[in-house]
Amino acid sequence: MAFLSKRQNKTPLGLYVHVPFCRSKCEYCDFYSLACKDDKLMDGYLDAVCAHIKEAGALAPAYKVDTIYFGGGTPSFFGADGISTILATIRRNFDVDSNAEITVECNPDSVTDRLLHRIYAEGVNRISLGIQTDDDEILKKLGRPHTYAQAVSAFQRIRKAGFKNVSVDLMYGLPGQTLRNWQETMDNVLRLLPEHISCYGLKVEPGTPLYSYKEIANLPDDDLQADMYLSAVEMLRSRGYRHYEISNFARKGLYSRHNMKYWTGGEYLGFGPSASSDFAGKRFVLSRDLQSYISGIRDGGEVMEDVQEIPLRERAGEYLMLRLRTYQGIAADEYEQKFLLPFDPIRKILAKYRELGYVGVNDDGRWNLTAKGYLISNTILSELLIAQDDSQPLSRFY
Image (cartoon, rainbow, N blue to C red; front, top):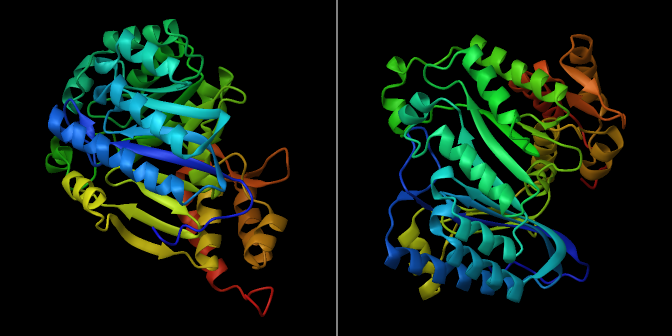
């Protein structure tokens, strides 16, 4: 990581810690995770992550960490002691903002009072709870190791422990799920009054168990999934949630600050196997194998894969793809100043889709996709990227 140069000005930085351990592997999961409770392996992981954090912190003194996110895997399954140790290591080696957003992902089956009270005392101020659905039969089909009753109990424990910022993950397009069933799930979860809700459509990824029997899994078709999505948007907006990103909804001011870094081009560093980073002009992924990650950190070997320096024009394409997913949207002056490319070809396409109701302009005059525009986002983005590729730079020094 020799390219991590020291800078003079404090720059906001997000840290992501990938915890690859789970009680069991869900049928649809394509993230790198291991279904095991191996204390020796967990200790080796903890030592490696802490050593990695120490190494990276020494090379990045000019950054201020304003978000920390523990994802997985299942961080709550890893336990309070490990999370607390990693947090303490981060604070010793990075300049962490006193108002940093610190999130821990939890599954209902591994939420305990001890875990919650310990991590709350350590400064964790946001919980992301994976509920997915209120239908126990569907949860069982998905391989989820909990019931909806456990999810409600976990949410109540989280509140009792003092957490005032709780996000809930839900999924639509699940095996056997109907529109009415999805609407009932939404209604039941909304009674819990979470500050943030993420609604993800099921993606059947190659290599997952679900992929091998997807033809007989009774999955909702594309039209039904679209109806589910639009129904969720309408219901959540009517309950006071802002639709700030294609799959995410939040009470005022309580959007995920960490995830916004991914969508707005912020810098972040990842730790743990398979974690991604976008830092100091470079993008890279860490080894997608726990043993390789541990041995690489321990023995001074290489743990980074696919290190890339992203060209400015490619960054411009990412700006369009990611920012249009958000309420914040894109702006002509920002686009031209950042990337030295003309906005007029982009504006013409956006204006065409605005007339059709797929694109809107927010209160700040920035372009973004509407709810139904999200459903055809790939088509719109494809046209925008073609127009961008055909554009001539505004400066000969591009």
